[in-house]
Amino acid sequence: MHRRLYWSNCALCIGLLLPLPVIGQTADDGSVYSRYGIGELRSSGSSRAMALGGGGTALWSPQYASFGNPASWSQHVLVHAAAGVRFEGLQTTDATNGRKLLRSGALDALQFGIPLKSNQLGMGISFEPFSRMNYAVTTQGSLIIDPRTGTATIYRLRHGGSGGLQRLRAGIGVRPSSWLTLGISADYLFGITEETRRTTFASVAYAETNISTSTRMRGVTTTVGTIVRLTEVFGDRDRLSFAGSVTLPATIHANRALTLGESLNRDTLGTKITGDMTLPSRIQAGASYSIDDRWTTTADLLYEPWESFESDLALAGYAPGKSSTLRNRVRYSGGLELLPAGTNQLEPYLARIAYRLGFYVDGLYAPPTSTADINTRALTAGLSLPALRPGTRIDLTFQLGTRGSHAPGLVRDRFLGLSITVNVGERWFVKRRLG
Image 1: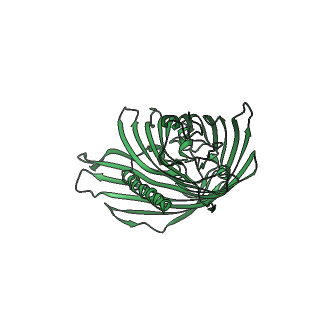
Image 2 (image 1 turned 30 degrees about the vertical axis):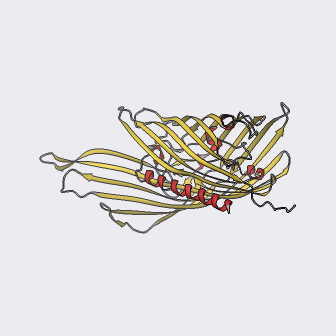
Image 3 (image 1 turned 30 degrees about the horizontal axis):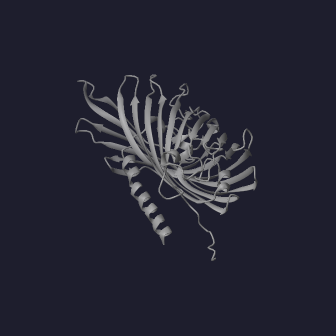
């Protein structure tokens, strides 16, 4: 009874949080760089990994359901559930020093880890964002009404985009030996992006027009991974791990509809356009080193060959049969964690808090022009707060970074992010013994 009540309260808390991202996303407030390709790429390995730079390929812990590598799912002892929300403040500056302040919120991820055989065989299930398109750009110009007199009217052209791909994952991890773990997952990608172009005029003689392009996408891919764990390499109570994972190329089936009309009364233009996209593979490698369960350091590298991307449908930065601006993506990160109490739950509360610090550098796979070199550089930090109930932690993760430059045709983003994640761990499926 207590267990059902506890999980019901957790579900209620998560339900109260979920409406918040909807309010934030309706404003289409985000980086203009999310317009290109399939949007800004996201990753949600775990709240612990996000505070350590966002990698986590070789990171594992009995306190977390890590989704940076399916091989880590074999190490579950408790049933884990994690849910979080992400908030971001963004300041965009252009070449003329024009500034715009934006803010947004979104659901981060829902993750579940289930031990089928404690510390040997486990299952992972997650629902998380894969890409996000969320931008709004407004330009102003004049339209000549009468060439003889030079009479003109002012118009405003607003480009906007929203939506993105989500990823639903399910798989298993197995530990065939004390030093080796393997894992595999099936990843279902799906979502809708909608881009609009709205034109308004200062003169009442011209009606507002609104053109919208809606693209519905779905596809399946597979991720395989491994972790090699070496113990007592440099000391009696240390642990060194090396890991890697590969996500296979995904064929995305897409349906696109185009609508045109005045204001919000739009009519569909022609029939729907169908086509396929081929997303590139994703290769990740990482290492982690833990000392006495108190100090943990991690380093990760990610590579995606976006120059091999193909699509039957045109995207911003890509047109079928023409040269594109897409380039191969390289992301590297690292981090350091201190947990003063280690595994000792009798230490004072402040000693049981985990303190985290990290960084990452991520190359933009879809820059606005072929000559632009856009990188995201950010510092990450976090606190993991133990709750009164054993096995439950509340993670606070912070990001501070920059993206882009003030070069002509580009903008510079400065962003500050906050993520709040609730991690719950309980021991289930234990047979009761009568003494």
